[in-house]
Picture 1 (tube, one colour):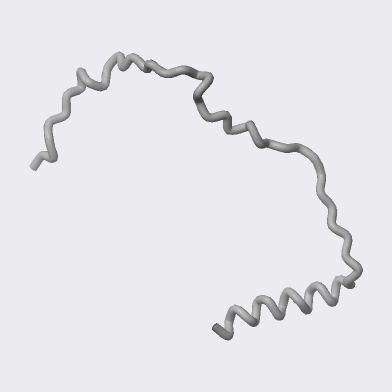
Picture 2: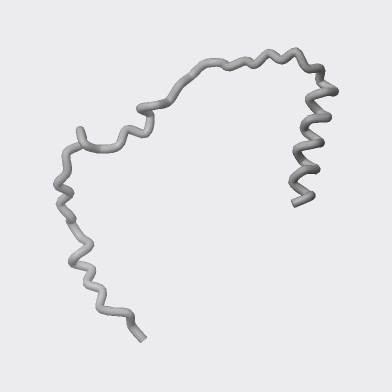
Length: 60
């Protein structure tokens, strides 16, 4: 029960011919720092809003 032949010789010594300048840089948009958000709402008001958001998802 095979799905096709597997030739190990095709997997050995593969010559990768690519230009590293064209490679994806995963750190290109990395940022370090802080973010802050000030709100005039009290903690209780924000928690009430969170409860409303959570409950509105249950109604659908």
